[in-house]
Every structure is written in C-alpha cells, then in structure tokens.
Length: 350
Ligand code: TXA
Ligand code: MG
Image (cartoon, rainbow, N blue to C red; front, side, top):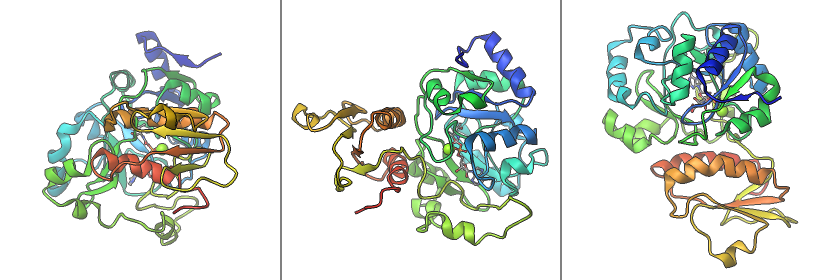
C-alpha cells in the first residue's frame, strides 16, 4: 500500500501523531522533500540516520514554523553581533535559507553530530508550515534520499528510496525550488556553506561584504577529507564536521554523468542528454533519451526540473548521461555545485 497521502487536515493530523510517536514522515518543502522526525527525540532522530544510511558525523537541519519557535532551538538570546547578522537576512524566511547558529540546550547531540551549533530553517511550503504548526514540534529533516543519492523533489521520489522507513509521506506537489537550501553560518562572521537559490551575490549585498569574504575558508580542495581527518575523534561515533555536506561526491546518480565538453566513458552506447534549453532535433537524434529542463534556458526552471530529470534518466538503463553546464554565478553557482558533485564519481574528469 502506498504511503503517499494528500495533504488533507486529517492526513496532516495523522502525520503529526506519527511524529509525536517518534516515527518518520516524508514532508514536502519548497526546496526538496525532507525525511522528518521530532528533533527533540534522540531515538526518532537516530531512525533518520539509519534510514538514510547517513554517517553519524553529518548533522541535520532543524525546521521550525517561525522566529518565535526558533528561540527554543538556538542559544537565545543570540550574541548582539549574531543578532545583527540574523536581522539582515531574517526577511528571507520563511524560505530556502538555512542558518547555522549557536545551539540551544533542548537539541540533542544526535541532531548536531555533537557540535555546539545547529542548522535551522523556516520553510515556506504551505503544507510544511501546517505540519510544523499542528505538531508544535521542531522537525529535524535532511533531504529524503538515501545518503549520496539525488535529493527528492516529489513524494514519489521519497517513496522510491525510503518507503519502508516512513510511516507516511505527505504529498505537497513537486518542490518549487528543486535544489537544497542555501546554508549560511552566522558563527563568528557570515560564511556560505552551501550555495542555493538564494545567491551568494544576494547575501554579499546584505552582509556588506564581497563574495570572496563570504565564501573563503570553505573552499575545500580535498572534498572534505582534509577537514574530517583533521577533526578530533570525540567519544563514540560523534565526530564534529566543520563543513559537512562538502564531500566532493554527493547527490550522485548511479549512471556516469559527464558535461557536454567532457569525453564519454569508453563503450558508452546508450547515452542520455539533459539540456538546459531547447535542443535542435538533429542534436536530439544522437541520444537514447533527452530531457529539456527549460525551453528558454531559465535558471530557476533548470533548478526546479534538474533532480527529477536526473532520476528519470538514471532509471532509463543508460551507459552515460551528458549534461549542459552554466556559468558559475547567481543560481548557476548552485546548479554547478550539485552537478560537479554528481559527476565526481567519474573516473575520467577533464
Ligand atoms: O533544503 C534543504 O535544506 C533540505 C530540506 C528538507 O530542508 N534539507 C537538506 O538537508 O538538504 P541535508 O541533511 O540533506 O543537508 C543539510 C546540510 C548537510 O550538508 C549538513 O552537513 C549541513 O547541512 N549541516 C547541518 N547542520 C550543520 C551545522 N551545525 N553546521 C554546518 N553544517 C550543517
Ligand atoms: Mg541531503
């Protein structure tokens, strides 16, 4: 029986009941679907790590309904300088922005991987807002995919990977943004930890600093290895990761993914193509399957449609997927960040 349910008041009430009982629920957000648990219940949060096969050192984002509820998950009141930085971006909430702030006492170690900071987000999706309001719980929710696979942008994607792990999946329609939230640390000075639809340019303007200043110190050429090996091993499994989610390979389809200007894996016969704008018929003919993400090449539309197209082609028994690239600014930066990680598994990179 499918666990996907429409977002009726009855189904939302039932999902909140599941969450209170410590079970997992697939939830829609404007960025991607989340795998939610009561953030205050360590055994519920442990189920998230088990279901995703997520390493215990990779912390989770806590979702709350509003600024008032934020106060119970971060160390409130914030230091005056942190409060000032928060004020410069608070109007982007509810929305696709995650902030890393000093952690509040109520948040278990399991959520933050033992760190003294917590990532928080106030999502705008109407259904997610209802779930947060009805449950009256802060919800820990990573993207609802198995660790290392492409994030889900529909309820069906969640069911495809995690059906056995969830009590229910609430269907809120396809995610509007299609890429995971922008993550900014407000610990000390603002730092961009993950690019997203809220762009580095937008943030730099608000914080009154250059993009370089905003992004320096988190460019990690080792893809995370240097950072994680430099960490003290704390008790048990908990190892604090300073820039988690920065592992170079991430979000990968099983099928090798190459950019149009790269060479195909040898012996690739059935090749799929993801185009960012309309593709002339004579070019389409060369591929076994073609996905056009936006007829006009619009970046928001490309972002919105990207993960579903990757998943469809990954299921199409192809030997390789060829994908366009975009320039690395604005939303393009977030798109390329995800695609470089998705293609990082390929043995031959040029
Ligand atoms: O759009 C999103 O952010 C989605 C939806 C469901 O909200 N969630 C999401 O979660 O993408 P996840 O777990 O797939 O990615 C969260 C990222 C990870 O890279 C994690 O390492 C990082 O946030 N993170 C979590 N807590 C952190 C912290 N205290 N400091 C630094 N990074 C943190
Ligand atoms: Mg994820």
